[in-house]
Length: 294
Image 1 (cartoon, rainbow, N blue to C red):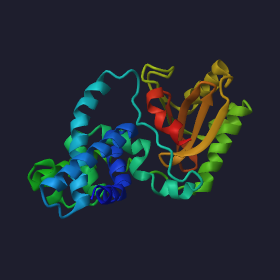
Image 2 (cartoon, rainbow, N blue to C red; image 1 turned 90 degrees about the horizontal axis):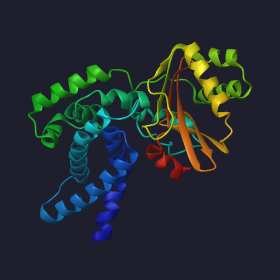
Image 3 (cartoon, one colour; image 1 turned 90 degrees about the vertical axis):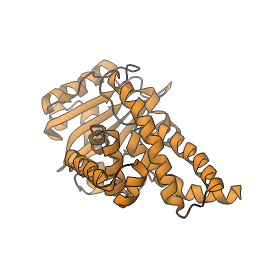
Image 4 (spheres, rainbow, N blue to C red; image 1 turned 120 degrees about the vertical axis):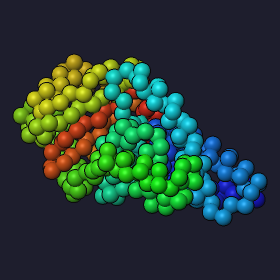
Protein backbone atom coordinates (compact mmCIF):
# COMPACT_ATOMS: atom_id res chain seq x y z
CA UNK A 1 0.00 0.00 0.00
CA UNK A 2 2.77 2.44 0.96
CA UNK A 3 4.76 1.69 -2.18
CA UNK A 4 1.68 2.11 -4.37
CA UNK A 5 0.91 5.46 -2.74
CA UNK A 6 4.47 6.62 -3.13
CA UNK A 7 4.39 5.78 -6.83
CA UNK A 8 1.13 7.69 -7.28
CA UNK A 9 2.60 10.74 -5.58
CA UNK A 10 5.91 10.54 -7.46
CA UNK A 11 3.99 10.92 -10.70
CA UNK A 12 2.64 14.22 -9.34
CA UNK A 13 5.82 15.48 -7.71
CA UNK A 14 7.44 17.35 -10.67
CA UNK A 15 4.28 19.40 -11.26
CA UNK A 16 3.88 20.07 -7.54
CA UNK A 17 7.50 21.18 -7.11
CA UNK A 18 7.16 23.50 -10.10
CA UNK A 19 3.95 24.98 -8.65
CA UNK A 20 5.60 25.47 -5.25
CA UNK A 21 8.62 27.08 -6.92
CA UNK A 22 6.41 29.57 -8.73
CA UNK A 23 4.66 30.33 -5.44
CA UNK A 24 7.85 30.75 -3.40
CA UNK A 25 10.66 31.56 -5.82
CA UNK A 26 12.91 29.20 -3.86
CA UNK A 27 13.59 25.75 -5.27
CA UNK A 28 14.91 24.16 -2.10
CA UNK A 29 11.79 25.23 -0.22
CA UNK A 30 9.62 24.00 -3.08
CA UNK A 31 11.14 20.53 -2.73
CA UNK A 32 10.57 20.64 1.04
CA UNK A 33 6.94 21.66 0.50
CA UNK A 34 6.38 18.76 -1.89
CA UNK A 35 7.78 16.30 0.64
CA UNK A 36 5.67 17.76 3.43
CA UNK A 37 2.66 17.59 1.11
CA UNK A 38 3.25 13.89 0.51
CA UNK A 39 3.02 13.16 4.24
CA UNK A 40 -0.19 15.15 4.58
CA UNK A 41 -1.64 13.68 1.38
CA UNK A 42 -0.92 10.15 2.57
CA UNK A 43 -2.50 10.92 5.93
CA UNK A 44 -5.59 12.29 4.17
CA UNK A 45 -5.95 9.02 2.27
CA UNK A 46 -6.11 7.19 5.60
CA UNK A 47 -8.82 9.46 6.98
CA UNK A 48 -11.10 10.12 4.03
CA UNK A 49 -11.97 9.09 0.52
CA UNK A 50 -9.98 11.07 -2.06
CA UNK A 51 -11.50 11.09 -5.54
CA UNK A 52 -8.84 13.24 -7.21
CA UNK A 53 -5.22 12.67 -6.12
CA UNK A 54 -3.91 15.60 -8.15
CA UNK A 55 -6.45 18.09 -6.84
CA UNK A 56 -5.86 17.05 -3.22
CA UNK A 57 -2.07 17.28 -3.56
CA UNK A 58 -2.32 20.64 -5.35
CA UNK A 59 -4.54 22.02 -2.58
CA UNK A 60 -2.14 20.87 0.12
CA UNK A 61 0.88 22.37 -1.68
CA UNK A 62 -0.90 25.68 -2.24
CA UNK A 63 -1.87 26.00 1.41
CA UNK A 64 1.61 25.08 2.61
CA UNK A 65 3.08 27.70 0.28
CA UNK A 66 0.69 30.36 1.54
CA UNK A 67 1.85 29.66 5.09
CA UNK A 68 5.49 29.96 4.05
CA UNK A 69 4.91 33.07 1.97
CA UNK A 70 3.78 35.03 5.01
CA UNK A 71 7.09 34.49 6.78
CA UNK A 72 9.07 34.79 3.54
CA UNK A 73 7.68 38.25 2.83
CA UNK A 74 8.80 39.40 6.28
CA UNK A 75 12.31 38.04 5.65
CA UNK A 76 12.52 39.76 2.27
CA UNK A 77 11.72 43.13 3.80
CA UNK A 78 15.09 43.01 5.57
CA UNK A 79 16.94 41.25 2.75
CA UNK A 80 20.26 42.89 1.86
CA UNK A 81 20.17 44.23 -1.71
CA UNK A 82 17.90 43.05 -4.53
CA UNK A 83 16.11 39.72 -4.09
CA UNK A 84 16.14 37.28 -7.00
CA UNK A 85 14.49 33.87 -7.28
CA UNK A 86 16.65 30.83 -6.75
CA UNK A 87 17.92 29.82 -10.22
CA UNK A 88 17.02 26.46 -11.71
CA UNK A 89 18.97 24.58 -14.38
CA UNK A 90 16.59 23.47 -17.11
CA UNK A 91 15.81 19.76 -17.09
CA UNK A 92 17.43 19.04 -20.45
CA UNK A 93 20.60 21.09 -20.64
CA UNK A 94 21.21 19.84 -24.19
CA UNK A 95 17.83 20.92 -25.55
CA UNK A 96 17.58 24.73 -25.40
CA UNK A 97 14.52 24.73 -27.64
CA UNK A 98 12.53 22.70 -25.12
CA UNK A 99 13.93 24.69 -22.21
CA UNK A 100 12.93 28.01 -23.77
CA UNK A 101 9.46 26.74 -24.62
CA UNK A 102 8.82 25.67 -21.03
CA UNK A 103 10.41 28.74 -19.45
CA UNK A 104 7.61 31.31 -19.48
CA UNK A 105 6.15 30.37 -16.13
CA UNK A 106 9.51 30.21 -14.32
CA UNK A 107 11.40 33.07 -15.99
CA UNK A 108 13.04 35.59 -13.67
CA UNK A 109 10.83 38.37 -15.02
CA UNK A 110 7.69 36.35 -14.34
CA UNK A 111 8.74 35.27 -10.84
CA UNK A 112 9.70 38.84 -9.93
CA UNK A 113 6.31 40.05 -11.17
CA UNK A 114 4.65 37.48 -8.93
CA UNK A 115 6.58 38.93 -5.98
CA UNK A 116 4.50 42.10 -6.31
CA UNK A 117 1.29 40.18 -5.67
CA UNK A 118 -0.37 39.46 -2.36
CA UNK A 119 -0.17 35.73 -1.46
CA UNK A 120 -3.83 34.99 -2.27
CA UNK A 121 -3.60 36.87 -5.58
CA UNK A 122 -0.51 34.86 -6.44
CA UNK A 123 -2.21 31.57 -5.65
CA UNK A 124 -5.42 32.39 -7.53
CA UNK A 125 -3.53 33.56 -10.61
CA UNK A 126 -1.15 30.60 -10.76
CA UNK A 127 -3.87 28.03 -10.17
CA UNK A 128 -6.21 29.47 -12.79
CA UNK A 129 -4.00 31.06 -15.45
CA UNK A 130 -1.06 28.66 -15.30
CA UNK A 131 -2.57 25.36 -14.14
CA UNK A 132 -6.09 25.84 -15.59
CA UNK A 133 -7.79 24.95 -12.31
CA UNK A 134 -11.53 25.86 -12.28
CA UNK A 135 -12.49 28.80 -10.07
CA UNK A 136 -14.84 26.58 -8.04
CA UNK A 137 -11.92 24.39 -6.98
CA UNK A 138 -9.70 27.42 -6.31
CA UNK A 139 -12.40 28.86 -4.05
CA UNK A 140 -12.36 25.67 -1.99
CA UNK A 141 -8.56 25.65 -1.85
CA UNK A 142 -8.34 29.26 -0.67
CA UNK A 143 -11.42 29.20 1.51
CA UNK A 144 -12.99 32.13 -0.35
CA UNK A 145 -16.19 32.65 -2.32
CA UNK A 146 -15.87 32.06 -6.06
CA UNK A 147 -16.58 35.73 -7.05
CA UNK A 148 -13.83 36.87 -4.66
CA UNK A 149 -11.40 34.38 -6.19
CA UNK A 150 -12.20 35.65 -9.68
CA UNK A 151 -11.38 39.19 -8.52
CA UNK A 152 -8.10 38.03 -7.02
CA UNK A 153 -7.06 36.42 -10.31
CA UNK A 154 -8.13 39.48 -12.33
CA UNK A 155 -6.14 41.88 -10.14
CA UNK A 156 -3.11 39.62 -10.35
CA UNK A 157 -3.40 39.35 -14.13
CA UNK A 158 -3.36 43.13 -14.46
CA UNK A 159 -0.14 43.34 -12.45
CA UNK A 160 1.65 40.48 -14.17
CA UNK A 161 0.47 41.07 -17.75
CA UNK A 162 3.22 39.99 -20.16
CA UNK A 163 6.04 39.48 -17.65
CA UNK A 164 6.22 35.78 -18.45
CA UNK A 165 6.22 36.17 -22.20
CA UNK A 166 9.76 36.67 -23.37
CA UNK A 167 10.93 37.08 -26.93
CA UNK A 168 10.39 34.01 -29.10
CA UNK A 169 13.92 34.23 -30.44
CA UNK A 170 15.18 31.01 -32.01
CA UNK A 171 17.00 28.93 -29.39
CA UNK A 172 20.17 28.71 -31.49
CA UNK A 173 20.20 32.50 -31.79
CA UNK A 174 19.83 32.83 -28.02
CA UNK A 175 22.91 30.68 -27.49
CA UNK A 176 24.81 32.53 -30.21
CA UNK A 177 24.14 35.85 -28.48
CA UNK A 178 25.40 34.41 -25.20
CA UNK A 179 28.55 33.20 -26.98
CA UNK A 180 29.09 36.67 -28.50
CA UNK A 181 28.60 38.21 -25.07
CA UNK A 182 31.30 36.01 -23.54
CA UNK A 183 33.62 36.58 -26.51
CA UNK A 184 33.33 40.37 -26.14
CA UNK A 185 34.18 40.13 -22.44
CA UNK A 186 37.08 37.76 -23.02
CA UNK A 187 38.49 39.93 -25.83
CA UNK A 188 38.15 43.16 -23.79
CA UNK A 189 35.91 44.66 -26.48
CA UNK A 190 33.44 47.12 -24.86
CA UNK A 191 32.07 48.26 -28.23
CA UNK A 192 31.17 44.70 -29.24
CA UNK A 193 29.58 44.08 -25.85
CA UNK A 194 27.56 47.30 -25.97
CA UNK A 195 26.10 46.33 -29.34
CA UNK A 196 24.61 43.24 -27.72
CA UNK A 197 22.75 45.22 -25.04
CA UNK A 198 19.47 47.12 -25.22
CA UNK A 199 19.49 50.82 -24.35
CA UNK A 200 17.65 50.20 -21.09
CA UNK A 201 19.25 46.91 -20.01
CA UNK A 202 18.90 46.17 -16.29
CA UNK A 203 21.65 44.33 -14.40
CA UNK A 204 20.44 42.87 -11.09
CA UNK A 205 22.66 40.92 -8.72
CA UNK A 206 21.68 39.09 -5.55
CA UNK A 207 24.33 38.52 -2.91
CA UNK A 208 21.95 38.55 0.04
CA UNK A 209 24.66 40.12 2.19
CA UNK A 210 26.62 36.87 1.93
CA UNK A 211 28.58 37.56 -1.26
CA UNK A 212 29.74 40.78 -3.00
CA UNK A 213 27.00 42.18 -5.25
CA UNK A 214 25.58 45.52 -6.39
CA UNK A 215 23.11 46.74 -3.78
CA UNK A 216 20.82 48.32 -6.40
CA UNK A 217 20.03 47.36 -10.02
CA UNK A 218 22.24 49.01 -12.65
CA UNK A 219 20.34 50.41 -15.63
CA UNK A 220 21.49 51.47 -19.10
CA UNK A 221 23.86 50.19 -21.79
CA UNK A 222 26.85 52.36 -20.90
CA UNK A 223 26.60 51.82 -17.15
CA UNK A 224 26.19 48.05 -17.49
CA UNK A 225 29.08 47.84 -19.96
CA UNK A 226 31.35 49.73 -17.56
CA UNK A 227 30.17 47.57 -14.67
CA UNK A 228 30.88 44.30 -16.45
CA UNK A 229 34.40 45.27 -17.49
CA UNK A 230 34.99 46.81 -14.06
CA UNK A 231 34.04 43.53 -12.43
CA UNK A 232 36.27 41.63 -14.82
CA UNK A 233 39.22 43.94 -14.11
CA UNK A 234 38.63 43.86 -10.36
CA UNK A 235 38.15 40.14 -10.11
CA UNK A 236 40.14 39.34 -13.23
CA UNK A 237 38.24 36.07 -13.52
CA UNK A 238 41.32 34.86 -11.68
CA UNK A 239 39.29 32.71 -9.34
CA UNK A 240 37.25 31.04 -12.09
CA UNK A 241 38.34 27.45 -12.66
CA UNK A 242 35.26 26.27 -14.52
CA UNK A 243 32.47 27.86 -16.53
CA UNK A 244 29.32 25.91 -17.46
CA UNK A 245 27.03 27.14 -20.23
CA UNK A 246 23.49 26.06 -19.37
CA UNK A 247 19.86 27.13 -19.62
CA UNK A 248 18.73 28.83 -16.40
CA UNK A 249 14.99 29.27 -15.94
CA UNK A 250 14.68 28.78 -19.68
CA UNK A 251 17.22 31.49 -20.53
CA UNK A 252 20.84 31.24 -21.68
CA UNK A 253 22.90 31.04 -18.52
CA UNK A 254 26.48 31.03 -17.33
CA UNK A 255 27.53 29.29 -14.11
CA UNK A 256 31.04 29.88 -12.79
CA UNK A 257 33.01 27.90 -10.25
CA UNK A 258 36.07 28.76 -8.20
CA UNK A 259 38.34 26.28 -6.48
CA UNK A 260 36.04 26.56 -3.46
CA UNK A 261 32.90 25.65 -5.40
CA UNK A 262 30.08 27.43 -7.22
CA UNK A 263 30.58 31.19 -7.44
CA UNK A 264 27.60 32.62 -9.28
CA UNK A 265 24.86 31.94 -11.82
CA UNK A 266 23.91 34.50 -14.46
CA UNK A 267 20.85 34.37 -16.73
CA UNK A 268 20.48 36.52 -19.85
CA UNK A 269 17.02 37.75 -20.83
CA UNK A 270 17.16 38.29 -24.60
CA UNK A 271 14.58 40.31 -26.50
CA UNK A 272 14.70 41.17 -30.18
CA UNK A 273 18.20 39.79 -30.57
CA UNK A 274 19.74 41.80 -27.71
CA UNK A 275 20.22 41.34 -23.98
CA UNK A 276 17.50 43.25 -22.11
CA UNK A 277 18.30 42.06 -18.58
CA UNK A 278 20.94 40.17 -16.63
CA UNK A 279 20.11 38.33 -13.43
CA UNK A 280 23.15 37.31 -11.40
CA UNK A 281 22.71 35.21 -8.27
CA UNK A 282 25.72 35.15 -5.93
CA UNK A 283 24.05 34.30 -2.63
CA UNK A 284 25.55 30.86 -1.84
CA UNK A 285 22.33 29.74 -0.15
CA UNK A 286 20.52 30.08 -3.49
CA UNK A 287 23.13 28.22 -5.51
CA UNK A 288 22.99 24.85 -3.75
CA UNK A 289 20.46 23.29 -6.13
CA UNK A 290 22.40 24.48 -9.20
CA UNK A 291 25.62 23.08 -7.74
CA UNK A 292 23.95 19.72 -7.11
CA UNK A 293 22.52 19.65 -10.61
CA UNK A 294 25.88 20.39 -12.26
